[in-house]
Each structure stands twice: as structure tokens, then as C-alpha cells.
Length: 315
Image (tube, rainbow, N blue to C red; front, side, top):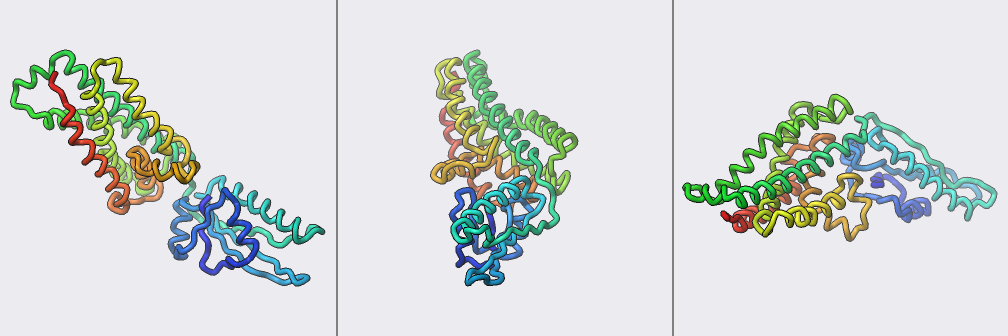
């Protein structure tokens, strides 16, 4: 759980040190008050922490732990309260053997949009659908065209490899737009999926998905070019697809992984794609406001496109 530390919070006392030692808590310092509230409303952090010293009894100060949360915090605020109570209980057991409490938790909630499970699940499902359709569809299609000598006949015409690949991408784009619209509409009208800016957010998600489409179709083209028989396509595609499905935050956040693994997950194309969709849909982030994500996908496109053209085979 990511907890922002208020600039006015006392961070030199034993209560703060006890909270910092909780494995499930990730304290973040240095954010401005405006940034903290903005991140809280977006659901990027669970709460804002402010520890203040109160009265002194028997030469031992009492502290108040103020937590500012929002409806975007979801069930994490309940979990946070539980782990804080446990940490305070351990301090009480050591300092106050007669059950006197060193601190108590006070929660103040601010109004924000509700973060539902569908807001996390649907972008992951969109990424999963695009990945599977682009990789498997493209690899099987091009291999079939080559095996049936269709590409050999096309080779007679003045058509370049890049033109064939571009044409295949454009044809896939039409069907992708239809399936994308159906899934988002179903999530919005049936499961109350958040489109923070309405139809504008939908079109921005659709435009952003083109970056993922280029990456995943390029992977499919490379697979179709290197395999020698049709039976090899599925195992090779699974080797590329399954690790991304497991590591890219489709079903649970990447933050749950060990830190050393998170750095690897963050650079995978499916992670960049799904995280970008979630930011656009729920946080209202525009494409030009997440340059790192867009740059990461563009780097993948630049790396994969030449390989797609080079591995292309007419027969």
C-alpha cells in the first residue's frame, strides 16, 4: 500500500518508525499537498499520513495518526487500519503493559470517484484480447498464405514486404476497433466502467491501443517468418505470450511482485499498454501526459518493425 507522508508529519517518533517497518506499507515523501490530494483521488495512493504529538502522560507522549483517504482507496483503507492497529498494539504491549494506548487512528475521507474492480479488470482484458488476436492471428495467417503459395503469387506484383505488412495491420485495425468498442461499451453500461471524460476518453483509449496493436502484430509477423511448420507456431507464441500475461498486471498489480522482478515487468510492452489504458480511463490522463509509457511502446515498435520486415518470407 502506497502511503503519502504529509509535509507537516512528525517522522522522528517511534510510531512513524513502526509504520515504516510494516512490509505491506510503502511510505512516499516529498509530494506537495496538491499532488498528494490529486494522487489520492486517482487511487494511486491509499491514504495521506500525518502523525502529530499530543499530550504527555507519565513522561511518554501520545500520538495521533491522521489518515486522509478517499472512496478510491477501496478496501485497502480497511487493510491499512488493521496493520496500523497491529503495529500500535505491539508498541502498547512493550511500553504500556497495563493496556494504555500510545496512539489512535483517525480517518478523514475526501469525496472522489469510486474505484471499482472493473476499472482494473477491463483494461487488462482489453490488453489480453489484443495480444492474443494480434500475435496468434497474424502468425497463423501469414504462415497459411505462404504455405498455400498465395504470397508467392503476390510476389509477381510490384508489392513490397512493408506494404503487405502495412495492409495486414490496416485490415486488423478495423476488426480491432469493433471488438474494442463492444468490450468498452459492455463494461461501461453493464459494469459501470469508469470513462472519466466520457466519449473523449473512449476515443483516446482507441488511439492509444494502436500502439499496442503495432507491437503485438509485429511479434506475430516475426513468429510466422521464423517457424518451419504450422505446429511450431503455437508453442513459440505461447513462449512469448504467457510470460507477459502472468507478469504484466492483467489480474493483479505488478506492485505485488518482488522489487527485482518489477523492473523487468515495467518494460514489457503489455505492461506499458495496460497501465496506459488504466491511466486514461480512470485517472483522465491524456496520451501526451504519459511520455514514458508512449516512448516505451514506440521503442518496442522501432525494434520490432525492422525484424518483421527482415524475417518476412515469400515462400
